[in-house]
Image 1 (cartoon, rainbow, N blue to C red):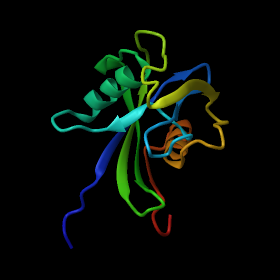
Image 2: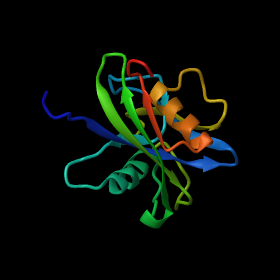
Image 3: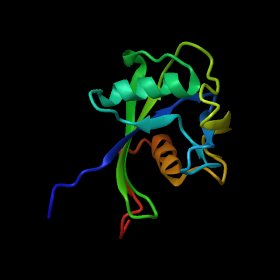
Image 4: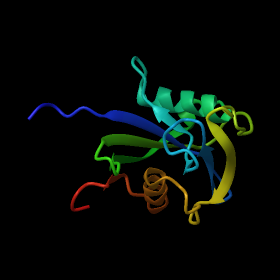
Length: 147
C-alpha cells in the first residue's frame, strides 16, 4: 500500500449567543444549496491556522488574530463518493468586523442558526464538526465503514 494523501480542510466556528454562523453554498459545482461553516482548503505554504484565518477573511470578511483561535476538533471524513479528507475545526473567540457575505459568487447568504438546531440541509461534515464542538469531542471519523 502507498502512503495515504488527503485534502486538509479548515473550518471556522463563529459562535454568538448559542448560535453558529453558516454559509449557504452556490455556484461552486460542489454541495451547492447546502449550509456549511466558513471553510476552505489548506494551500501550499501555509499553516492550518493561517488557512483558517484566511478563509474567515475571504468568506465572511472578518479579521481573526492567531491568539483568538482555539483548536476544537479534527474530523477524518469520507464523503459518499469514498474520498477521504481531514477537517480541522477552530473556534474564533473574538474577531474584528461584522460577518458578511464576502463571496456572493460562491455563497447565497450567511445566517446564524442555533448550534443545536442546524438546518436539515447542513452538509454532514459540518454537522459532525459542530456536534463534536458542542460535546467537546476532539476527534471523530465520519463516513468510514464501521463508524
